[in-house]
Image (cartoon, one colour):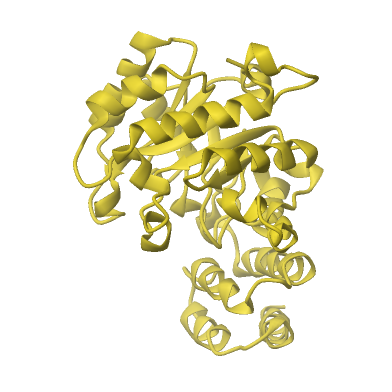
Length: 330
């Protein structure tokens, strides 16, 4: 097992969850400027894609700025040989770690027998983990230069709770860390996360290998709640996801978004918008609209501004709306 950067972090370790079409470098940089988490993750990138002739089309999704360190690249797929190839690319890109997605519930991922589908195929999951660790330089027979620690993010089960077997299997591998989301994949986010089950999962993992770090994930709304849950459920750390939408101050203990004037919130959104325009022109501009809805809330006039922003079609129009609104506030 290779701990890498994980061993240098103070517990509880608080990280920003990988979220598709949300946690790109633009969002991560805006957060880093206002109070970074202990660890950043990219959203998941296809191992199959990175192993194909079209890999260059995916590399922009793996862009990161040094201010985002430590940063872990998350990958998904169902072919061990492609995880080996993808891992070598991630090493060349100088990431701090590699995370295997074993929990995504999206249909397009499940159709590839990837994500949470691998919970029901433990033999293949173990082969993927071994291939990734081997390619990362994490096993004794493959240590050539600096290796990267390998972690996994998963759920309690796919359609049924199989954590009583799944936790032991993951604990028997050489992963450095496991993040457990306290829901079944089929439930997505319909029900509250089950923290008692998360705690039981962690306890089972530790009984097999106490060196593996175990993190909980699901419905955590603040840094204070994260620290409280880590202590209450005997976890090494917490991963925060949806609560970060529109709130780049989420990891800052001294600042609460609810206490900020609209000007500061809009300026943060403008910074996010400018970074997205500069770094992610390969992605559809409509992805920014979920951020508009999250940032612009909580003050008189916010609804009208949101309505205007949801009608814009490009960067220039959005910037014009926000600049105009700021001038009125000044």
